[in-house]
Structure formats: structure tokens, C-alpha cells
Length: 82
Image (cartoon, rainbow, N blue to C red; front, side, top):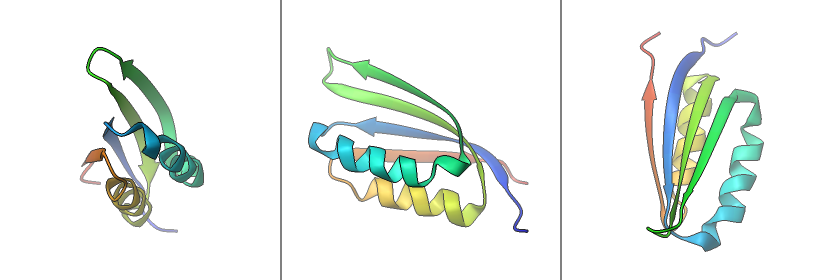
């Protein structure tokens, strides 16, 4: 079994047309998502999402890489060292 890591993933969505595809990607990685907090920041026209994750580095980087390729979506991750 591959070692898993804990981490947080911050997502800022500036393009509403990317939301459906973003949610589809998150659904595909539901097994590594421990918790999700979404904040619609209406006055700025963006959404902010915070994820708590527990998974392999391959799974976490695969998810963040796919999310980061979406138009108007910015992603940053902070992962435990072990």
C-alpha cells in the first residue's frame, strides 16, 4: 500500500463556467477528500474552496494538476512531509 499524506488544497474559482467540470473532478477524487468548505465571495465574483485531503502524492498531485488546468481556476496545496 502506498504511503498517504495529509494536506490542504486551496482553490479560487474566477470563472463560473469551470464549476461543473471542477465538481466532476472533485467527485472522481472523493476517496481522498476528507472535508470541503466552499465560500461564495459574491462581492468579488469568486468562489473559494478549501479541501482537507488524505491520499497518495500521486492522487493529490493528479487532482490538483487537473484542477489547475481549468480556465479561471487557481490551486495551491500544502502537504505533510510524511
